[in-house]
Length: 184
Image 1 (cartoon, rainbow, N blue to C red):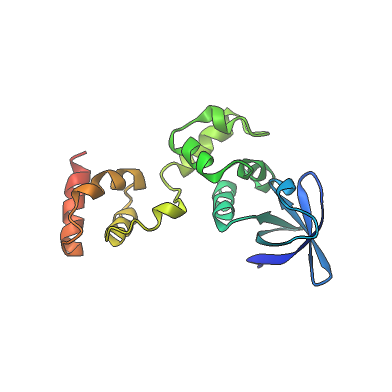
Image 2: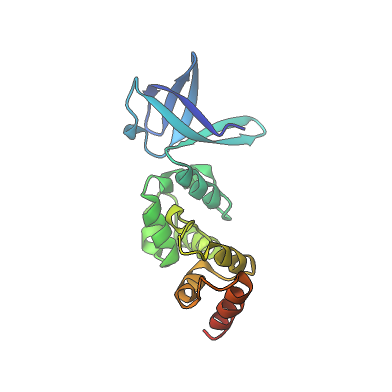
């Protein structure tokens, strides 16, 4: 499995780029090929889609885009060809639409109807992690991980974190946070 490919853009089309890597041209399907310029070198993060008679590469500018894409293709009724146009939008806007249950935003993408939009929201709401959410720098990262492993949603956890003393031992932080979560 490839993690990324580095090379120069040889050509591009409406939904793909051809990345030249040491004389080998990789055809990579991307959400927006027009952000790439010919004869410039890029690092493209890859997802390998392998089926019986098909080996397809999908490319992304960032690992965050790829991670969202992987989450989307695990939703019932969403495959790579349906998920790729969704990734053309800013990742934060997609996260926001899912968290706010904005069906109108999700249905603006090709072939995404009400049913698929609702399924995306059902499967992904509260489960998406933004890169800026990974490190809160307040000493409560371990507590957040523990509470998530217990099945609490990230949004609920974030509401009670300001009321937990980061100076306490982790055991006390967990007890305090659980009391706050149960009283909600």
